[in-house]
Amino acid sequence: MPATSTLSSLNRIGIDESGKGDYFGPLVIAAVFVTPASEQDLALMQVRDSKKISDGRILDMAPDIRLVCPHSVVAIGPQRYNELYAKINNLNRLLAWGHARALENLLQEVDCDLAIADQFGDERLILRALLEKGKQIRLVQRTKAEADLAVAAASILARAEFLLRLQRLSEDVRTALPKGASAAVELAGRMVVRKYGEDRLGTVAKLHFKTTKQVLAGS
Image (cartoon, rainbow, N blue to C red; front, side):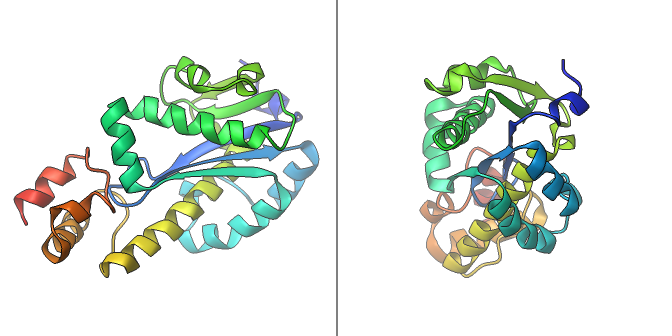
């Protein structure tokens, strides 16, 4: 597998997602096109894995990354997510579908023959989901891919979109919807059910999480 230093000298697309482990909110996949020149700008911005950056800083950094780099963001809201999961019934396949869509959308704007993504399953899952343009690309999947600035930039754009959409959902149901999956998340779920009924839960949450059973049992 090519070393990170080798890949960093190439034009490439980084892909990453946010919301996979969060009960509330969307699943967001971002793809970012980076050149050696724009990589220098990202380094000056101190772009790194979004998990190492505060939410406030992520929201501040995302607009600058969007200005510097061509990008594509695919946000799958809870309702659509639940519909897709019911059909696909496999999170890795759903992730692969989202990665492929974000990559294909960006390839409508840029010419690139290399993409880097985090390893989350058999790389053939993404390759099978790609359309005509995407099938011509070389895809590198590896663990800790966020060490590459292109993937780190994608992780920030994905997390920023996730945070903005989670805030909008919280405002819609007039209940603070926490990140992650915890006792506080279960409580918020019960509040949504008590206010609006069970059907409303599917508009803000990923229903296949075991949290759903706990929420409904306590409502």
